[in-house]
Length: 472
Image 1 (cartoon, rainbow, N blue to C red):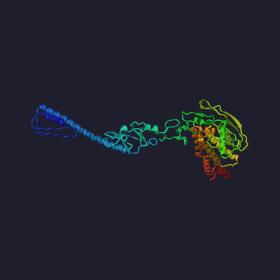
Image 2: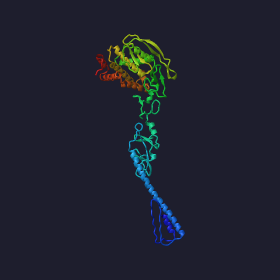
Image 3: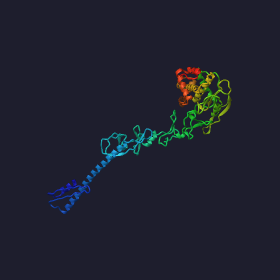
Image 4: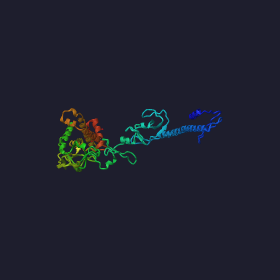
């Protein structure tokens, strides 16, 4: 109405005894002026009417804006209440420990809300109400990539928000074989296989799609990793190949080391028992030729023989040919003759030194029991005490390697140079013995180890000699 006042002031005429009435209705906005007194000229009346009309239109627009703003605020408040109620509903789970939410922008008038991202007051306009806090839309950022989250859904871990794609990249498990994300099963759950020692995760499908598994460390071989295919169908990873013993002559120094280990236990083996490295087929044939004995399934990797047989032994280690296959391996027949109760010890060729040694220590214990005249023992007792000695040898090898760096002997120096993976491999072979679930080998080992720790090895052996059982 200010412009109307200025028009009136610029007029040379007075409005005498006049009055002005303005009426407002929702359907039509208009003013009804009424005047009395002096009559103005026609041109003056037109100017005044035009000024009144413009001023009234301006006033109407201002009042309309105020009403529209009130209506918008009411709608925003209703929307905010609905959003708040929706956030109180349990959100669907995401991958692993993460949760998926649906951030919704809301509009509120300026207030005392503080942004959890920049710690400044949130003014009038859009903001998010997520994770029990308020955020500017540009401050609600992914914990991984630090970019704003504008997706319809997001995931959380440790109360931190993530893009769904970033969360999957950081927390969804990947297969250690094919390097892809492990798929979900029909129930929508992530299902994978995991090795109990190596913590290797892989898709269940790799157990049936021909993916090679190392016959020594039992790891599934990643797609880009090479391995050796042995003549008898076994696969050997390159890390296990580094310390693998491939023929009979190569194993003789290890045989001497284990004989010294037995002497240190006051369990000297006086008879010269032949040690032969053989292929899988020759080992299986020799097993069938034995009248007595218990063999660890699913695969036997060592035998202590008591019968006369003809054995095919590995005379010369194979070389690695085309396609990483072992070729040009030379074997020769070996006739076993019975000079004592033990005719030979057979070990599967192509296994790492520590695994070969633990198998040899186990089979030598069988030989020692027979050569010392022990009665026929229960399987869990005989196999259990043999596993105890094999475990003791592995422990001595690993502990001596740890202290070998301070020794000047050539034997100790050779142990000190043992690669870190070989030490890890030795721990794995110990784990295999300790976690064996078979009633003969596993339960027998645990009962024998308990007796040896309580009474000592010699007292335990004496009790076995007298009773055929472990001491309680």
